[in-house]
Length: 391
Image (cartoon, rainbow, N blue to C red; front, side):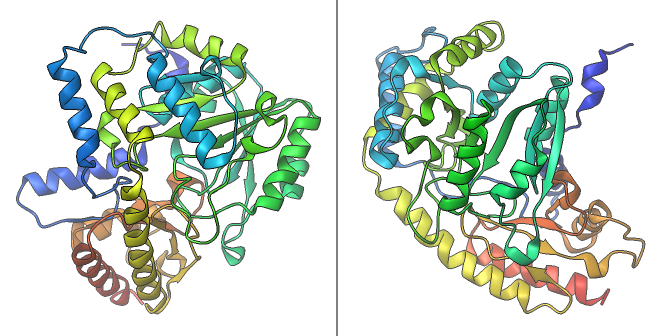
């Protein structure tokens, strides 16, 4: 069977692959500690679940508008206004099947064969694959662990060429937890807007910031014409399986994304949309509660990782990931790269992590601390024993 060339440009998501391998072992009765999953271990708040149940009882189970019901698009604009001081209209909003779907729609609407997209490293796995699938070229900007993977406007400016169509920023970052300083973010915006290059800001983890207040570059005066906001309810409200994401962008781009969505998924799940309205407009206490617990876990994880001889770890300022450097253990015991490391760690220590190659680096693995303290303690002790044996 012959397949289209474009399918060979991408690979299966590394995070999903790790999850599948861990699930196979669990199904066989193996005790696995899973640090691979990028999803909250908290339950969806009760008020959100009740809104979904109510939608079922009211038979809100039919097709909706392709880009989301008006009630939800208004709620998204209102939540973003309250959180960040923006002023979006529902015509500048689209609801999709998760934030990943928004990114796919936006890149597909913007990138032609040979167009360049500037992407900081480490990057979330899907960014690069979506660009490649659409025939674009990623121009990678490498950040340094020594500076906690901080990106600078100068780096972005040096990467821009006449073929640059888009710059993608993910802050807080998956996988590193880096948070882009507001001053640098504004400088990057000044550079891209001056050159009529769109700036895509992935705000999936925007409410999980450990120092200072959450921030959106879209809050700058006039930014709406030059910025694409990608948001998701998955992490903020522990709604990963509900699959609700949204985009905020200039109305013409929203129309193009809507055109594509009309031929792929049509509307997002109707019941999940009603639940999303409640999530956005209802009580927000659960967000702060999750952040407080993530902060406690973060301190434990970073302290523990840094106590392991040979392991270094940058300081994550947001999200719920640690990105330790395990480079000192490469080249030993048949471990040539982080994929080998992750496979051996899972096979021998029964701990699942995501290899750094998936995110564009060669000496790191991603550890999610969106799991209980008991699991963190068990898993990090296994991790310590595994690397100590190879010291």
